[in-house]
Length: 249
Image (cartoon, rainbow, N blue to C red; front, side, top):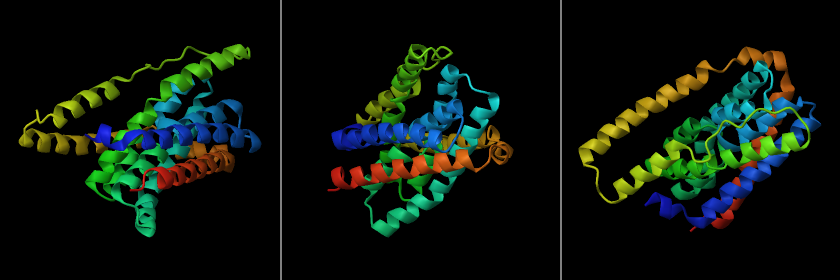
């Protein structure tokens, strides 16, 4: 039912804010003097889905190992701040659960961060945010494929895009959502699944931390952090404004 509930307005919020922040992220990285490949990774990771987007984009960009580490560090740092800040903003603006969930899913970087910030308000907000975030993740494949085509067109060395056009976790999410909507899952099984899901979320957050090296951020300096933060502000601002206009009851 959540898939139907978010509706076209939420999809407009996701699409417009994602591509706006992607274009801005690449632009601001160049303006701040961030290297081209690192700027691309920061832009894709910040706009779409964090670490997964960085890895997928790096398969095309083929930057230095430190570039992906820096991008992951910036995204983890900013997204972790978002887990704390977003529920406070929700209370300050009196956002309802649906509006907040749309904004959360459309603007925080990692899926784990989106879910954590959602649960910081309510279970319903987390559910809406998860669905919106999955819609945003679906944009990763076309962006990476376009990036590969664009780099080759401009005669820039590029690898092969290693990203599925339709992620399997997205397919499974839709399948299980339909099964659950039809009442095909016993209540006891749902409770067990929620507990397992919580532990998997904890493992996912730990995994993100294990691949993040804040030492690389110190070496890289303030410019990548400034670029990532500026992109996040634009993404959060655009998605907030669109959600406020299109998704309020």
